Image (cartoon, rainbow over all chains, first blue to last red; front, top):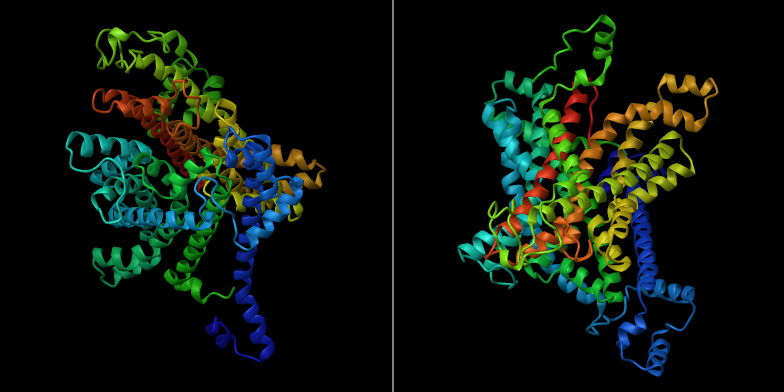
Amino acid sequence: MSTVVDTTGGGGAGANRSFLASAMPVLLQLRRLAFLLFFVTTLLFFLLRAAGDPALVLAGTDATPEQLALIRAQYGLDKPLLVQYLNYMWNVLQLDFGKSLASGENALLKVLDMLKRTLHLAFMAMTLSSAIAIPIGAWLGFRPETLGRRIVGGIVFVFQGIPGYVTALVLIQFLAVNLRLLPSLGYGPLEWKTWIIPTISLAFFMMPQLIRVTAANVAEAMREDYIRTARAYGASPMQLLWRHALPNALLGTAALLGTQFAMMMGGSAIIETIFSWPGIGWLLLESTQTLDFPVVQAEAFVIAVLVFLINALVDLSFRYLDPRLRNKEA
Amino acid sequence: MTDIAPPASANTATLDRYKRSRFKNISNFEVIVAGILVTIIAVLAIFGSFLQTHDPMQGDLMARFTPVGEKGYTLGSDNLGRDLWSRMLVGLRWSMSCALTANLINLAIGSTLGLLAAERPGWPRTISRQITDTLQCFPFLVVAIVVVVIIGHGFWPLVLTLGFLAWPIYQRVVFAEASSIFQRDYVKAARIAGVGRFRIMIQHVLPGIRASLMVIFAFHFAGLLIAESALSFLGIGAPLGVPTWGNILAEGRQYMLRAPWMMLVPAGAIVISVVTMNLAGDGIAAMSRKRGRSIDV
């Protein structure tokens, strides 16, 4: 931020204005985040209230009316819905989502505890998928018209139609059931064998799209003038690809990785359920089905903030990857 | 398969009509393959009840776990001796009608909001963009899981959830493309000539984004198929007794070792139909690129 102020120079007023100008995108982003969180919490509050009575969930089905009344009074559930809503929003502002109805833990802490395992899975899957997809995509996009690349492109296209849970089931069938090489479910923080199939299934689902986008971007970059210039200066094909075309093409890939991360937060619900991987996707299904209101709320909140942060990070990495954006005046 | 030959005994008038018809331009290999596959899927979905060889719900316990193709069970039978082929046909109809209805709802909401936002700056634009932005920030499947679990099993809960949550892609593309069309001279001319707002949107602007809408419709159809079968697979989409692809897959998973086809048949069906839709989208996009329109989805 300070560099922006320095380059514009001028008097105090000018520096001030440019500071505001550079802070403006951040403020706008924060407004977006506030709107998003407001929308999510409000929607979920009323949806969950429409779904069932939290007092019933707390007390169990065989509770007497007196017990129910006691619980209602204790949790403020006897007040009008609007008052409850305002109370609730006030608590959310202080990041207090209440206690899990199932286990009595702090809902937010429980979600954050689960989150690290999901991030673990997401990180492994994204690393694997980019490590494979970017070289293949670059190779495909370098000279798209040859026969071998067309065949590989076709295979990638078919793979794009395979949902992650189908890959997961097939891998379980072959690696865990037939060959008995790996455990078919479960999670151990240090047992790397349990990580393999979930990671591959998730990565497989994201890879084809990543390959196709990288290939399309590399192919487009190869048609640019600066490639022709570099070629005229005698750059080798490898230099052309790795030094000139790929850095430009990676912009699109970075944007897609952000989108895919958001998708993965949903997709992990399926993968985690298949593998009994105790992350937030698994928790989401579990807590929604048992109507564990505070946990569902906290979870939605955490996912919204997380996806938002990732998107902001992608925007930032754009500035790092593309000097043209870095120097452009806002 | 590059060009369909004109009818041999054509007089000039029919030849002219043929040249102007859009079928002449279908020269794209992907579109032809996808067209054939979509036709097959549509026929199976519409006339599926006549093609069933067995009762999809009633099993023959003597014929449990029949492998593919044996004893008249085209795709084998499941753990209760029910015919998989007949069950897959029921599931096909369910999945297709679910994805189609949800897609149409998405199309309607998304393009309406997109057009309203693109027309001119003002409160419709602010509201439309704000809602889209919010929905897009949030992983769609997460919301879908919560909503579906809460409002319950069944066809309409599922369709409406998908229909009202998955439209942002339409809004985004319609907004981007319609914004530039609203600036064209012919739209301005129409406005000066006194054509009404909504007539301009529908008759003058919408035809210009038809190709993009077709492409998204196809890709989005594939995405909805995956979402629908995933939710059913998790046991929160279709009601448990209904033989949808997701449900059959979830049942087959329990008998992975004994009868792998119980899992591979629905998995294959899902993959084939998703690839078909992707193929259609890709082909249509390639075709319109050839005509000088670029489509970014």
